[in-house]
Length: 411
Image (cartoon, rainbow, N blue to C red; front, side):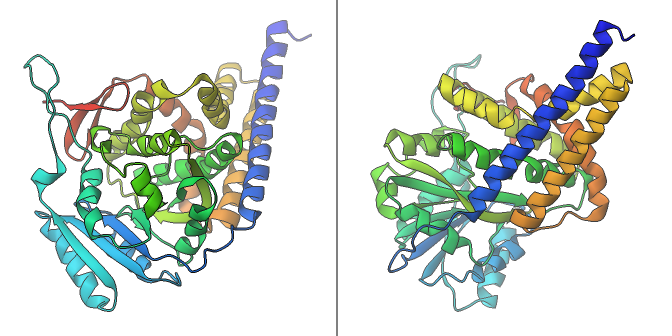
C-alpha cells in the first residue's frame, strides 16, 4: 500500500504535467488564431516610411542585416536613415560598402559623436556626484529624427534581419482606430556557439507563445523594441522620444507613454530574425542578467495588480518542467518520470510546431540536444537571476538599475 506522501507526490507530478499540457494547448490555440486572422485593410495610398537604423559597435552580422532591408517589397518610398557613432570607423566602413553596393537606395547617414550620446544629472552617492547614463540608442535616434521624412517612422535595431513582407505586415495596423505603436515577434537565428544557442532556444520556445497569449489578455504593456513603428502624427502627439533617455528600459517606457495618451500598443504577426552573437559564457551571463533584472527594476514596480496577474498568467508554466525534474530526482518514482517525459515531449512538440508554422526557421539538428537544458535549467536560472542584485553590464558600462527605470553608472 502506498504511503500518503508518495500518493501526494505522484498526484502532484501528474497535476503539473496536466497544467503544462493545458497551458501549451491554450497558447497554441491562441497562436493559431492570431496568425490566421485577416490583416487590417491596407492604407490607400501606402505611406512613405523612414527606416531609422541606429548602429552600435560590433553589431552581429551587420552587412547581412542591411542587405535584407534592400529586399523589402514595400510599394511606397522607403528612406533609410543609418546612424553611426562618429568614432566607430568599422561600422562606417560597412555602411560605406553597403552604399556602394546599393547606390539606388534613398539613404541618409547620420554620424553622432560619443559626447552626444550621453548626458549627466545630479544625484547623490558617496562622492556627492553620480553620472546617469543616457540610453545611447535613444540619443542616436533623437539626433536622426530631423532628417526623417517619412509619414511612418519605423525603428530597427542593427541585429535585425527583415523579411521581404515585413513593412506590408506591420504598417496596416498603424492605421486602425486608436493605435499608437505596432511591433512584431523575434526569431533568434544565431546557433554558432552553445551560449547563443541557449538564448535562441529560450526565446523561440517561449516568446511567440507568451507574447501572443498576453495580447489576448490585455494590450501589451511593453513592446519588442527590435522593430516598432509609429505614424508620424501620433509620434509627435505623444512627445516623440523626449525624456526617454533617462530610462534604461525604453521598451516599457515607450509602451507606457503610448498608453498614457489613451492609445493602444499592438502586437502584430510580423516575424523578424535576430542574430544574437554570444561567444562566451560570460557574455551569456551578462545578457541573461540584464534581460531579467531590467524589467524587474523598471517595469514591475509600475504595473497595476491586474497587470501583474496577466504577466504571471503568461509565464506561469515556465518553471513547471524544472519542478517535475526536481521531483524526479528526489523521488525516483515512476509517476514523476512519466510526467517529466510527457512534459519534455510537449515542450519539444510545441517548439517544433511554432518553428515550422510561424517562425519559419529551423533549429540545426545538433542544437536540438540543448533544448532539454532550455526547458529544465533556463527557468531555474531566471529565478536565480531575479534574486541577484540590481547591477548589470551594458555597452561597456557597469550600471545600477533603480526602481522605476532610472540608472546610475557604477564607478
